[in-house]
Amino acid sequence: MAIMSGCPGAASLRGTPTLTEKICPECGREIEIFSTDAYVECECGFIAYNEVQSCVNWCKHARECVGEEIYNRLKSAS
Image (tube, rainbow, N blue to C red; front, side, top):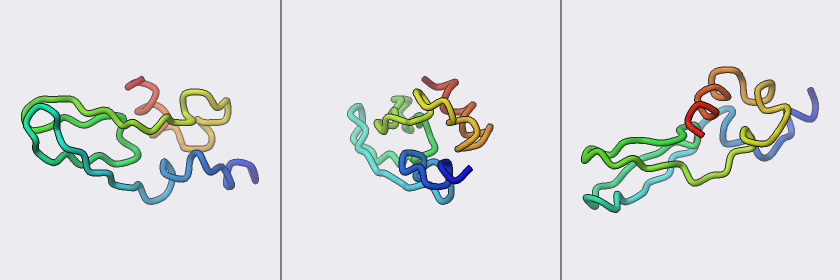
């Protein structure tokens, strides 16, 4: 388990999520997306995807490392 606690790829998925602000290309509104979100929908209906390539997509320890809930949410959106 020592490897899991030191994984830098999952740092933004575990613990306190980080917040990124984007500008919607459709309407120009500000969109807030957390590091644990695969995507968010703007008020105008545009879907903005999280651009961070998640280790959840390739690491064989991802489910154990980030937890079942986050793992399932991110895998279902990819």
